[in-house]
Every structure is written in C-alpha cells, then in structure tokens.
Image (cartoon, rainbow, N blue to C red):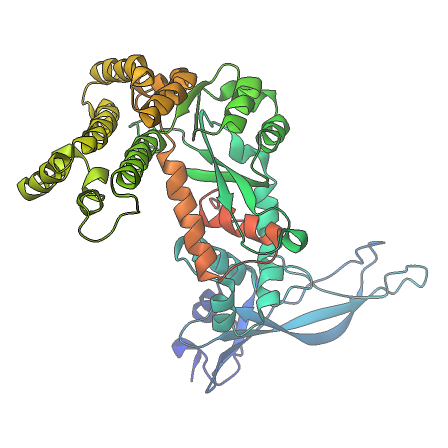
Length: 444
C-alpha cells in the first residue's frame, strides 16, 4: 500500500505524517506496518542526528542500528514495535564509554520492554476498569513480571509523592484484613487504612485511600501520622473512626485540634447486636435451647434487625404475636425499642433534634434494667464526645472509608489474593484513588 493508506506491508521512502500519528511520539517515524495472524508489527526509527559521547562530549561515530522489540498498547491484536535503534562509538581512546545506543524516553525507558504509552495505558486500565495484571499481560502478550516491572516504579514514585497528602482536612481510619494465611510467612493479617474524607465545595466526599500500613493498633496509626509531619496533622479538622480505643488514643495524641467522630453505621450496629443478644438469652431462658423452627423469637429475628418505619402490617402482626406469646419476651421488645431510639437519632432530619435524641440515649440507656442495653449505654457514655460529634460536624462519618474497603476487597478477589504486601499496597492505592494520575505519570 502507499503512504496515504497507512504504509501497510511496504517501507516508506519519506516520513509519513499519518503513519507517525499512529505511534504519537514526536521524533519517531513509522517505517513499516505489518499485520500478521497473531500480532501487528510496527517498525520505527528516529531521524539521523549528530551525537556526542555522554561522558566526554566528543562527537561519536555512527555504528549502524540494532533492532529493539517493544510491546505497545494492543488493539484487536497485540502490537509489537520494532525500534531500529541507532548505535554509536566514542572515538576518544581515553574515554571509558566505548559503544552506546540512543535513548528516547518519550518512547520507552532505558532497558524497558514496554512503550511509555503502554505503561500509562496499563495503569489507566488498572485504575478505572478493574483490570488485573495477569489480564493486561495477556493482552500485551508479555509475562506478568514483565508488566509489573514496568508499572511498579511508576506507582512507587506516585506513592512517594508527599504532595498527595496536601489539602486533607478530614481523615478516616479503619482496619483491613489483607490475607488469611500464616502470619509467620506473610506477616500481620491486619492493615490500618487511612482515607481522605475531605468534602468538596458542594459538601460531597470523594473518598480516596491515602495509605495502608501493617498492624491494627494505636502505634500503627501514630507512626503514620508522625511521618506525615506537623503541617499535615494541623490541617486535620475531623477524624472519623470505628469504636476502637487504639485509634481513638492515637487521634487524641496526634490530632489534638481535630474532632473525633464515631461512625454512625457501627453505633447502630451495636444497638442491633444488643437486640440479638437479648433475643438469644431470652430464647435460652424460656425454652432451654437455641432457636428452633416454630419458636416465636426465632421467627422474628430478621424483623428485629429492621427499622420500625420499614415494617409492613404483616410484619408488625408477626412481631406482636411473638412478643405476646410469653411475658418474658417483653424484654426483647424493650431492647428493640431502645435500638430504634438510637437509630432515630441518626435519622432525624434536623441535626439539633438528632442531638437531643442522642443525649436522651446517653442519659437513659445506662440505667436500663436490661443488662445488655445498660452495657451499651455505658459504652456510648465513654464515647460521648465522638458520639455527639456526628451532629456538630455536618454528619461526618466513616461510611466512605467502608466503601473504600469494599473496593479493596473487590480488587483482591479479582487478583485471587496477593502474596507480597508491598505490591498489595501499591495496587490498592491505585485502585482506590490514592495516587494522582493527572497529569499522566512520566515513566523514568
């Protein structure tokens, strides 16, 4: 074919702008495009130029070319770039360089086997399309290690850029289990994840994972906050967390000016767990066994986990029959009402009204004759400041952190698990938005 139709199957005599645009790299000309049964091969070269020795600067002598095979962004087939790389020799006998070859960083990094745009394409696929390294390696027709060796340095550079922690004013923290194997070979199962919960101008949270560090403890969180520096810590105004004392101690120690906020979901979950505990205890006391088919309390266990406003007339009738079946079941109903009161505080449309409901919970639960409810009341009183902070911080909570955890779990399942924690951290930072890809990373 001629140049006008893409130079397929024949070498070009002069540079063809249309063919050069196929590669999109300035200073690299397409000489030939060949479509085979299993791949597309593009032969490229750079224009002739005077080259000086990189060590002594003496004008080097041309020594011809050598072919270097690169893998490019695939289409319907894998794409291979054959780069006719120029070689030179330093004529100075006192120079220790000898022969050397040309480098074109816009095309490929030194000693790399994937083009720069192939690396950027792979990173974009991993970030936005839930791709896996193994899947992308198949599309590129390379080995898993070949692709990861090209991608990992870029991710490490992005992860090491401290500017990605700038402008963080709201911080979430949660534990995460990254493996279920032997601790002796894979290290700690738990990781502590830090998430940016900063709101935009419209009040929306665009959560992104900031880091994953080994361990689930106060020390793990304190060490990470210390590494970020005083400027970062001073900028944090709100710190959301689950009811874990280790993280709370770290916040009190390192983020003195921040407001700790207890996650709403976990507080409501504690109330629901109390109802379930009371139901099981009453079931055992009244029947002498665990719930069996036909037992009134077993038949309403799912109803007791629902919000009162969501129950249908049929469900209300079932609940009433089960409670009236035995006088002792009244204790279960009281516990359920307490859980509903706790839930109603968070559901209040007006934050001032919600705070009043929450304060009522704090003042009443710990005096309840039902031991499980009283224990919950004492727990909430210990966390009273973080519990009430939800209503003074515009409903700040750790929900987006849980969403990030879900995204991490998805990518771990897609990869069918990880063996290397450092690789795991980099992949999850990329998948959960912790690495800034704008502008596109520069491949070293």
